[in-house]
Length: 330
Image 1 (cartoon, rainbow, N blue to C red):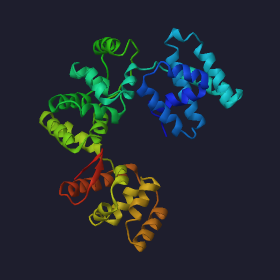
Image 2: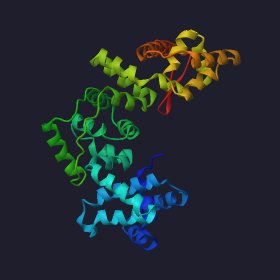
Image 3: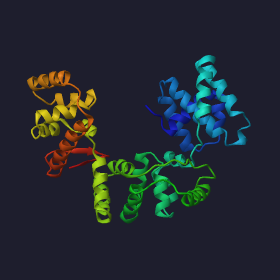
Image 4: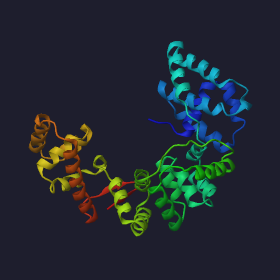
């Protein structure tokens, strides 16, 4: 389980000790103190790996600020040794320091209230906003987009869907914007965005916003819109479909088609289908899955796509419900 920004801060404070944590609290506002206190009170335990990740992130951030008056690497080494022992700490620290990348200032927006983040970037060019949003957690990006009007939201989503990376000129402009907005932190130069990113963000939108964006996509480029729709609901997403809908779907697909489709699935998704069959049918399917020889992945994908076409037809007719975001898409 990944930790959010507040949880990471709570972990750091608990590693500092009471006196140092108290000093940190003196520099926070009352809301921040309350959030951290509640989080710290509710934390029972974290894994060694989570502790290592938090401390590594702190080391990266700390290295950017001379005002800390400490050697961040030495500090991290000392803390890791105390937490994990010298041998394990030395090994992990070596891996961390060799593989670390520049911390991206954009990540700061992941820990802001969506309203604050939206207000901060609202007046920027839509391409700049799109470039920023593709670097955020999908849920945060969707929450920020929800605060824009339809016209701006649709424009941004088109740019995200056709995003091919940051060109040098655009990168220079974006870096300048972020220097002003986020106090000069560095931008992580990674190629992100595109159809999959657009689909992931749209999946987390409310139904009406989702429909408006897709409609705008179709008006702009119907083929692009269809590619995004194809990405929005994958075969593995059927794990989130309710039992009644799975039972309705099973009425529409052949046993052979389902058998091949399930050959490329994890056990959890297989069980989701099997649990919605009769006991006899489930037993037969389990035997067939166990005894059926290898199947080409292209054949598996073909059957899965065929089933997804049926899923989409049933969803559009209102016969099954597909869950997405915080609303249901029927």
